[in-house]
Length: 74
Image (cartoon, rainbow, N blue to C red; front, side, top):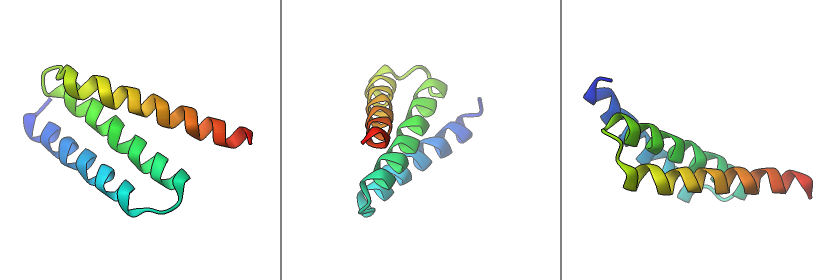
């Protein structure tokens, strides 16, 4: 992948993470944060398998999915 595209994905990820701090609705926060985490995982993969970026963001993504699914049950 073009390194410039990977850089834009990284900036997009940062933007989504920052936006998640602006929101007040917990469900929206989780969704926007999860999009940012997915972008960071993609960025980490395309930037040369940056495991310190991929692992925590992948875990956070699964945590967000868990809480979003758990919220629908109640």
